Image 1: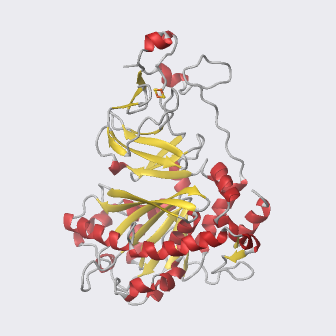
Image 2: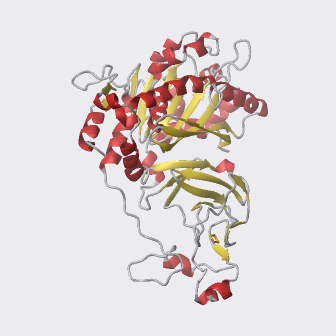
Image 3: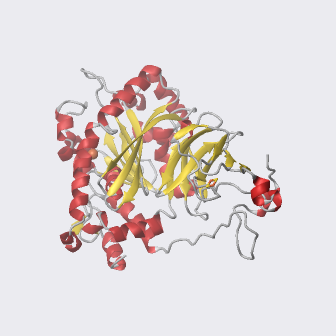
Length: 474
Ligand code: FES
Ligand code: FE
């Protein structure tokens, strides 16, 4: 990447070289150094409720089969046949005990183990020529699950997922653990936008500032209980671990009253109270901050909002998870899931889905407003003048780098991490500082894998010796 040291230094002081939002070289560096290492969301366990269920998802340009095997265990396997490299599973989702390659017919169990090779004896001399034992579709280098959210890292030495998420787990629970049963998801809707992937991630992490301007019309048509979009400045932004988000400040009242205010029925509120820690309850009840949008580095975002779903005053909350899947420097595939508590009443699920579709998803009103900006920004960032421009990303910071408003104290906000009331690009800077840290480190060098070949000193097979010896071919 040209002038890498300058670019990273400027990003770290909140002055953003405009071309980082549309630059093929920067994108190559992101692929090599960031997406080769960070944890990336691929699916939710509720998409795989039955033995044999699978979905096919991409991690950058790698296709993975995410499956639930016969024993109920979740796997993520590189979707490339060990023979000549055909994509083994072509369907996007389904249920299967085995996957058979369409090219020459090698077949694999739904945990990835190879079990069938047509004309094995005639073509390879049987087990003596090609021992199937221990051969399997390549597993994702690292796999982690939190609250049913399945993540993959391309780095075999990735730190454990829960360590990576750190204190953001506290906030992730609001979206994905509202009862002992957890959540179920619907979707994903998928579509592509001609925008750089970082813009959406930054926006959802902390851009309360755009709401009064970009989403004026949504507020004006009366979709929300709060009459003025400016109300957002009373909320806070917080950053903890690898993620951060925004909140709304709610009118005074108990935890139960505040949850009712955004439209949760009493029975759901009761279950949340049982499920969450006292601090998680107090962020809402005692401190009065209702979680809203958030992002987890590098490329997933969460939404929680409560529009009116019909004429009148009644509002209803919805939750969505979305992934900003990078396609190129100027294109992103958006995957958007609707999320709802498994134990929620059926009527709530129905109306919450309606609320989600009205606001977000491919036809959502917010989505349309946002994407218009992001496409235009990306387009402009690709021009030669953008190479001369350092954007000002220092909102909330004085000239000596001290904050415009002091962070909230524990008495004001009992969630982990650091939080500020009002407008400020604190979270966008956190996200971009993580980005700079990743881009600074050389990429991991993974070992080569040689399928079914006689071993030579120093080479690796597709399995470790311990795994090989414990398996039998069926
Ligand atoms: Fe899959 Fe030949 S490429 S069986
Ligand atoms: Fe927006």
